[in-house]
Image (cartoon, rainbow, N blue to C red; front, side):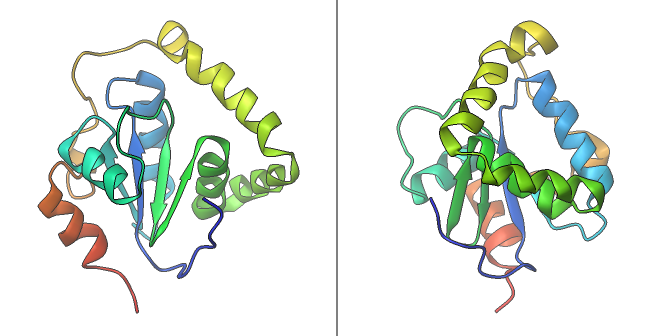
Amino acid sequence: MTSRLSNSRQPVLLLMDGECLLCHSLTRFMIKRDAKRRFRFAALQSEAGRYVLERAGRSGRLPDSFVMVQGAACYTKSEAALRVCREVGGLWRLLYGCIAVPAPVRDWAYDFIAARRYRWFGRRGACLLSVPEMMDRWIETVEEVGARCEGSRST
């Protein structure tokens, strides 16, 4: 989707592969750098993840991608990753300049890593993201999507 971010104060919901150790590590990395506490997280495989994808018109097979949802905008693959770098801020914000690289090239690199992430970083049968520092930002149910994301939007 190519819509612009409508409000930089809106919560950002990140849908991650709940079984991927690389995704788990990146989530912990983002939480440590999220001083404004804008990021919320859900597993793609969770009730909340499936609900958000369905509302974004992406129901069916789970995407083999990290997904960023902010307001009505839904981003996947390299665009999601680069937008998160911009939201994290600091020097990470500079990586957003890679958005100038054509999407097919960026997404090829993203897909290359995504296809090998379990082999390179490992996989767990259960989601590891529900650790103490994430509990107030981790979303499991449809009700939590409304309470922690939609209900806290700025107007």
